[in-house]
Length: 469
Image (cartoon, rainbow, N blue to C red; front, side, top):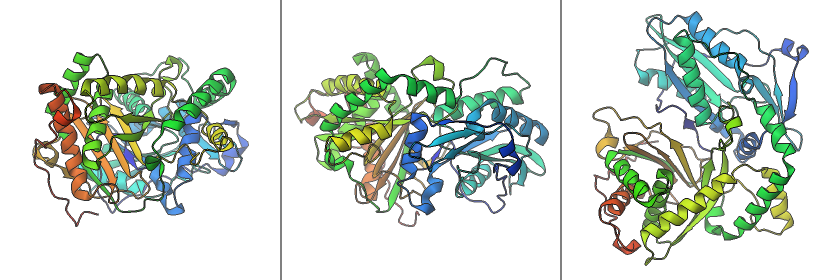
């Protein structure tokens, strides 16, 4: 797992971070608690964290920065966040990871006060710096609620709500929901009195759908046989490099391809990503761990929790294959995988082990593809990602060897974390520029085979700055 920011903003460093622990108080234990097994999505996060070293447990932390409307008081910001904590059980849940079947324990709501942290200036970068510093410290999900938050001020005036949320509590879709509700509350609106779905309800529903559980496990048992073992290897501890680019021409090309072929924009981007990997790695097959959002059922579309699970797919094509055939097949195969993206990870591991599979761990994949949806924001004027490659200041060793994230908007935003052993730093930037070139070539030139695709970058490919850590 690699740390992700669930807003479109990144962070640097700050000295003044002081935040609430949000630990469960001793008197909470005498109030009513609700205990149930974890959801399939929560189980996936827990098993993923078990692969990380003790000093890497903060990798499950996600950062979020919400700009407060002008004139918002600290009391109003606290009240708005309190309403969300009371409304969504995932924000007041702790987890017992000691049983074979982990448990979620929902704590009763108790009033709290958010700390104030004065920023050195009122810029978004300063708030993002604070969020990143706060995220460096592990959230102990066994005894702490899965968030910490402060009100960031400048010259004494509240400017931002700065949050760190554990991946057990939210995924990108859940944070988008929280941010929308936060915006409504800060504007003086109401969220209504209708009951909202809760993780315990999902966990119980998943365990009563026995026929569906069996069918899904059988589906993955069959699919597992087609995975590329080279992409199932663990233990790559080489330094990770993180780079990103933003491209409006690539976004336009992806939409044109989507409309011409009658497939999703997501599958077009995934296809171009796979073809670019074939070109740079000299391969014709790759297994990618797609991240399934698992929000197809309307009952759980507004659930605040992590519902993400891996839905791996193998992409294969020889050099004479027509690119349109690759994209259409990938759309059908990807949709099928995503429709089977909710499964009990431990049950699958047990069945794979019983069947003698040499690599039965459902979380051990080297290559990830995560489509984040319509959240891409246009970079500020002068940003390196508008013309070249933007290099991040850090990357986490616990991430997969190849972890590509795609977000759409007016432009396509691609962010890649790759290990030195999988792609050299220079080729990490080259890869992103190649994806852009492939999308434009597929849309504009209509190549009839993979060999005819234009792979040459359309933009400057910066050299990796060796002092970037």
